[in-house]
Image (cartoon, rainbow, N blue to C red; front, side, top):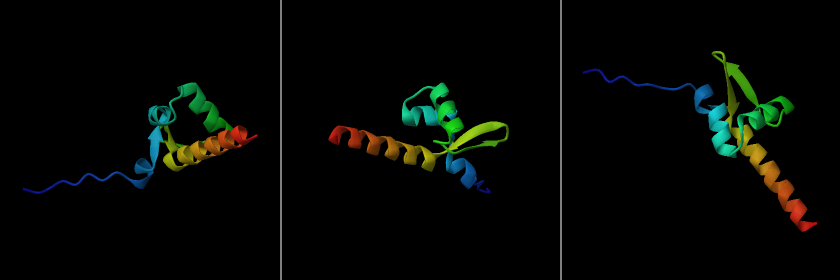
Length: 74
């Protein structure tokens, strides 16, 4: 019996759809769209669907955490 290996491309492994970004940041679809349009999140359209790079979500999270920390110190 031949084993079938299903591999996802790095594109799919390194990105999430709107719903994934919404879950990661715990915010609305509208907010994700706003962040993509402003360049805060890096996204692409693949097969007619927008996908957001996970590393851009993580970088955004770090930026807002650093901003919050600065505000607490002042």
